[in-house]
Image 1 (cartoon, rainbow, N blue to C red):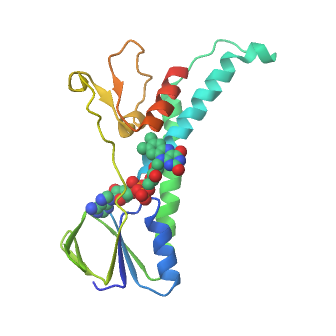
Image 2: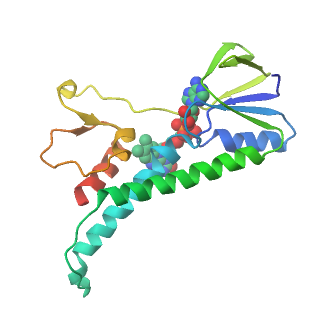
Length: 192
Ligand SMILES: Cc1cc2nc3c(=O)[nH]c(=O)nc-3n(C[C@H](O)[C@H](O)[C@H](O)COP(=O)(O)OP(=O)(O)OC[C@H]3O[C@@H](n4cnc5c(N)ncnc54)[C@H](O)[C@@H]3O)c2cc1C
């Protein structure tokens, strides 16, 4: 398939770029190997902020009496909190997918894209060619070389947002993700 531009990665930057290029009259192929929406939608901003919102609700419920709100026993159901986060994520991903399917001039392909030359990309058995190739392949968690990290279980951002129970505070698990996400997710667990 020959197009005007190939974009690898349908995370935060790929789809808006595809929208701009097709609006300018180009034929574009956008390739995603995993989940549309990339890190932010699936394992980053959205699920972590949704879990933090649950932790905040729990925190306020515990402080209810200070505000004159008297409730019964307060408990945290991590399964419900996780299901809510997954739903928010799924809705965002599906709306991104629907949008991709509606853009004239855009071909969306699922698969791992490999550069095979200055103007060619292989996706499965399909060869794509274009004079412009945009790499929007994002990032992934980097495990810091902390002494002892190989001897304890640890969680990166993808593991954290897949949790269905609050980790025990006495557990030896460590969080291994970017400083900001570690802080945020640890806060969500600790408050819960
Ligand atoms: C825990 C956490 C919390 C965060 N919270 C926030 C926040 O609150 N606010 C904020 O602004 N940012 C936040 N971020 C950062 C934000 O998620 C990233 O900045 C953003 O997702 C980067 O977008 P991107 O399009 O560059 O990459 P990504 O979203 O990572 O997308 C890249 C895509 O490329 C695909 N891909 C990679 N290689 C190939 C290949 N060879 N073939 C096909 N597809 C490929 C991947 O599957 C992925 O879908 C957070 C990140 C994390 C980890």
